[in-house]
Length: 390
Image 1 (cartoon, rainbow, N blue to C red):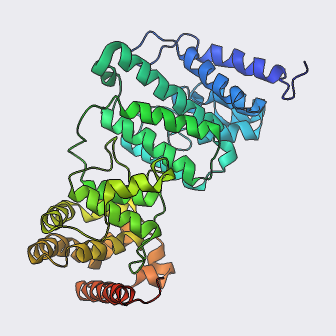
Image 2: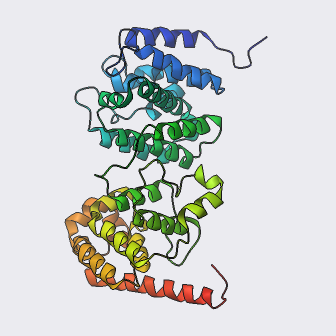
Image 3: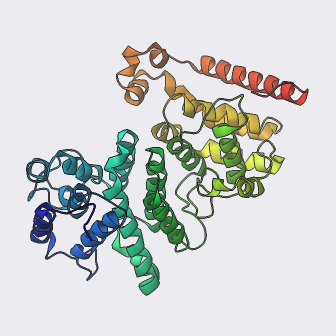
């Protein structure tokens, strides 16, 4: 039978090069050859119907990260073409032009990779998704074999590992990827969650993690709206007020695979517009302890700004919670009037865009929050009196 996706000697050339570069290497603290991983990623790509270019990129996807002094981006382009070069770049988490030496910190590299997916063509992502599938499968297999010891092989905690693969799945969705390969990654991330054990990472503030999740999912932040992304935020507030955490395996809000059955989300979160006084107090504590700079680092303006009046709305019947929020947040809001902080946060937009460049005082910020709360209360009253929803 004639192959509809015929291969040429280019793939054999890529395989030969891959063996020359990685033939003597093993995976992190493991006897498993690196070649087993690279061949596995290539197999996943081809089984998903990938092209020869994608198969070549799968074999070479680690070259720029692990062999920067031995084979360069330009050499990839000259030998295998520009599309292969672009796909290898799409799978690389080291900085552009990196030629060796100490790598940036793990979290910084992974976040930069995720940020880059925002502007990436989805048709360049099959090799890097296949890489994540093979990585997660390998972690799960090793966890079944040696248990918790497997996490000592990595330069990050098990919770960081889980965060990264879960964030990759969401980022690929956001980039426009669909199909069986992405669904397989989702299944493997679900399996990885079952290796996590109980609890969640205590070093991560739940409000910061929720803000990051909202940013990755492009949740709507319009305050008067009680559906769409705003509804997810309300659901998220309730969940963290109950002691659940967005990084934990059982987190459901905004999980696209979970939202395939809306009833599951509804039963898990309850009424998103109602919090008990105890839950309001817990939510206010979490938010007051969050670092304003960390939230602004994971969300762009204006979405992160809208999170705070939404929280105040949820705690409007609890005077103690509101006071706690005011004490915790207002000193952080004061940083907005510091020109250096503003310039560092928004860069060139300070001078180029009046919406970003205007100097916000604490008084102005307080006024805007008050206005947003007033409009939201009016909208809620209108709906309760039988007005048409918006």
